[in-house]
Length: 145
Image (cartoon, rainbow, N blue to C red; front, side, top):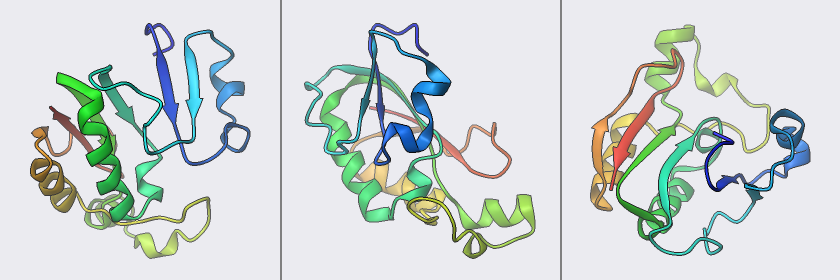
């Protein structure tokens, strides 16, 4: 992904806590933002969204706010992929409850795939797939504007 014209990593956790730049390296086109309001982005500027390992740590209300703020920032037809936490899929894949996941920044919040897809539809997005099936533990929702 570092080959994109501009790559924004939006994460509520500082990059030194995640090891982001140690993993990705320093690039002139890669920007790390902790601003979940997305105010740093102009409208209609984003044509691809990929989120993995972040939204599972946010309460549903914050995910909903993020979906609302993201909508004007993406272009029509933009492909968006969000990994979220889903208690049912987690239990099927691990045999355990997400309630056991108490450690880590932000905790672990069950957004639920059905509830998240319905919320995205309510904000005007279209669901391509409620789960692309590439992660055994967590759903990755593919949606577009």
